[in-house]
Image 1 (cartoon, rainbow, N blue to C red):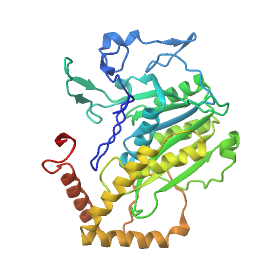
Image 2 (spheres, rainbow, N blue to C red):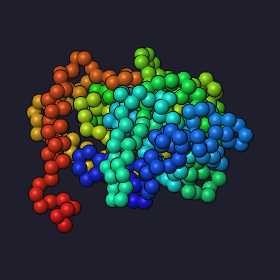
Image 3 (cartoon, rainbow, N blue to C red):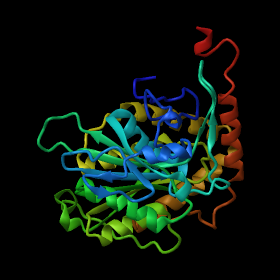
Image 4 (tube, rainbow, N blue to C red):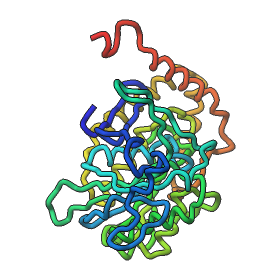
Length: 364
């Protein structure tokens, strides 16, 4: 484990854990999951301007060409690809958490439950509450074109989405955000054997030079949306240049996170926004993940036939790429059931989680 706490598990399921080295949020005064009597100790005004009641900030960072990136676990996060991409940014750059929202305002705890962290030596067990955090991720370069990031990362709120959007807009205004990037991922009937698809769209692209240089296809999606879609719309209404990046995850792969899709999303972020990120670690994880999925599929004839049908439909539909985003899971109703594929992958995953006796790091 590095100093920032990023961990890739050697098994089929890997996990990025942030933040680094001190993650005992529950013990910090002013945190949304600290005792209620401590909450008032957080800063309620910044530079003489009162903060929204549900927001706590430690200060207003001074950043270069500030770009806001947001991703949320939940409905907008198929295969946990979007949140994994955001977590990698936070784990890799020298990121500081400078703000958070009050969980009591935005979550229904019977729907989005807190989790218990096991006790470490000399410490009590902790309850970690769902929340949304704000990070500053500074580019280590001294170049004049260096771009510092603000990453908004957490669980999709259950309540008060319009109020929550106002809070995020308030933070962006105080910092002077120049560009907004929304990350999301959705399930589609794309086969795992083709390069991961990432759709992109932009609003107010004429207001930022990085977006003016690209041609975008307008999204034609109609239907339910999540908090990523709401924030994208609200920022666009305020005339911010907004870039949406959506990764398409194969619907039949139930293992999460999916580093193949997350890696492809980060590649597009680096290319479009011209930020510096080291993607070697996640690309290695993506290669391993892909190899293990292919091995699992090769063991099941029905699963192989299912993927071949997906490949056929993918080839036939390649000319109809609408770059739709912001939508729910998309699965073709004409395809055979994916139950056999899911069963094969889950059985393979269970075997991977039980390494044979005498193998693994513990036997060294």
